[in-house]
Image (cartoon, rainbow, N blue to C red; front, top):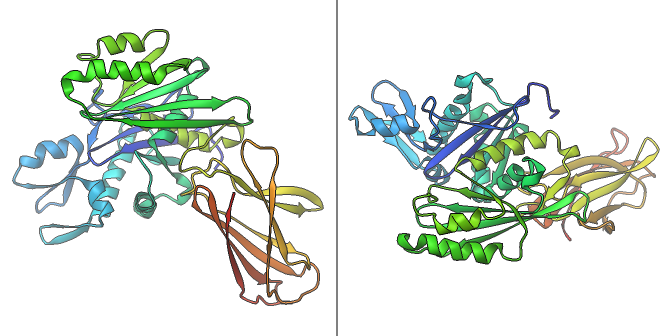
Length: 412
């Protein structure tokens, strides 16, 4: 999808309790976050729907929660958890699938920025979840028809990848050195550390994550102070981000003083929804993006074919390192000679050398040179394994397809 002068992106950070929605237009310097309360900086929208009895009218978020005590309304919470469980919800003898109600909630989130003068339809929607699994990715992909979107209009990323996009879309002074993010709710604390490998082109980005033990509330300042000293030692740090309801200046006294010594510190709750917006925009401009993120969901190697196109030799990229393996898929059709072999070129992003792996198409019908067309489909099954399917297509009416299909699992 080419980036247009009126491109418009939406990022939604969602969990079992609440969602936050940010938006980004082409001419905006940075994303803005929408609130259901005009002029408010309360961005967390409870993941709740409520329906007025006998009327079919739906409410969502804070409004639904406030009206939940009204006997005339039926309230449905935990929408994400219920949708993941494929739960059926009965309201006045009507049966609703939980994923349909989740889609309704997301449609209301998408419509929220339009009330602030933005377009009603976005070029791309980026959904951000704390962690990605096959199950939750499948859920949101399945919601596409209900949202009126196609697969090219959807991105699904986790908190780490959102942090990556958010950080590297800031001014360079904020990520010149290492960047850390601490995330805290009432009882739990985790940390992400982002590093750049400046020796590679594109620069390879890695993020390390650590989860800390739960402690008593009155110990947080001294406990967090010790964590800061231990985590940031031996690092040159440009910026630290504090995300989550658990951070409060009421208890952050000694720890905040240490954090702000020689580095920039930012506090807020909407970093991940903004990072999702940046991810959606960057997807339209990937050719000039000078970084590649190597997270746990990203492909660890490039897979290419060496082909001749109009007499010129070139590489056709099937799978790119750094692409989310849940989304990645490569397919092409090629004409082969009489050797019935296909060479695949595998390359690590930090390496200039490639390893060639040759697959032999056994029991292929004998045909003249360049009279066999095949379809190659590459589908990742994990971040370092790719299922290769090769199908004999024959050659038009002259040589019919044998119907043969070959499968191979390729690793680095």
